[in-house]
Amino acid sequence: MNGADTAWIMVATALVLFMTLPGLGLFYGGLVRARNVLSVLMQCFAIACLMSVLWLVAGYSIAFGEGNALWGGLGKMFLIGIDGDTLSGSIPEVLFFAFQMTFAIITPALIVGAYVERITFGFVLTFSGLWMLLCYAPVAHWVWGGGLLAGGEGALFSEAVNDFAGGIVVHETAGLAALVIAVLLGARKEKNKPPHNPGYVMIGASMLWVGWFGFNGGSQLAADGGAAMAITVTHISAATASITWALWERIKYGKASMVGMVTGTIAGLASITPASGFVGPIEALIIGAVAGVICQEACNVIRGKLKIDDTLDVFAVHGLGGIFGTLMIAVFGKGDWIAQAGSLVVVGVFTVVMTFILAKLTTLIFPIRVGEEDESNGLDITAHGERAYDHAS
Figure (tube, rainbow, N blue to C red):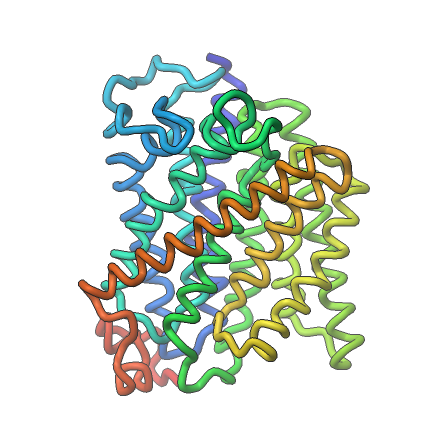
């Protein structure tokens, strides 16, 4: 065991949990109407709790067990046979478990942004649990657990896909799942209301930015120069995408909004995620500059042309950002084109099909959408019996 590596991954684990609680909750909560803010916070918090338990029960074993190319098996359920002295590389395996658990928390939590303001709470928890175990965990095994996309004997491609911190495993899967759920749900009755608290949005985005240092820097699994470079390029991409998003908004609409600028931050962070262990500052600058424009345009296409109410632009920002960053690894010569593009296709098809199946199965237990009256009154009071404010609108 290496003490420095262990200490850093402990910090990184806390930072990644901080991304969901409270970062993502505030980012998403500020974007909805006042009558629904608590429902968003509740969904993020409850998902964090449920995914933690399920990751212990079976998720970690499916993702990082020693099974076969398709899944890791159930040999590590409940961390049986693993104690504080068991190592994973230079850190305790229980710490690797905890670090990866925070990824298993934030990935289904990202999907929340697609269905806010109109979904039943029972569906959220049931679907999220099934999806983490049967969609996210297998993909994590394929890419990070030595499985189908990890290259070598028995793998789908001769070269391993390069996905340093989750462009495919986290952002593509969450983005595509969000798109599927948004289509199945249908649009909100009132979908043109402005964010109720842009201040929350900025605070939440800032927390995500800070937490992302653990997300990407921690994925090095060591306290070394690679982790330092990952943190540096993460920051450069986020800052650049923030600027280009705001500039593009100013060119098109005459004003640069704060909500837009911090959404650009998230686009830059998602786009650098898969590449953060393979590129330098100049490449990060390019990735961020392009991400701020293409992710903004994707928002307009999905909302305006496709008429899909992916409420908080999960696919346009996270999904497209992760896909773009994954391909840029090949553009910069840091990965094999066939492995990068092929893995995106394989995971994309699997995610769409599995998400659709799991959503349909979940509707046999819980309705997917609340009634019109509940949607009109807001989910805070109808689903949870609470209000964030005295006069919520």
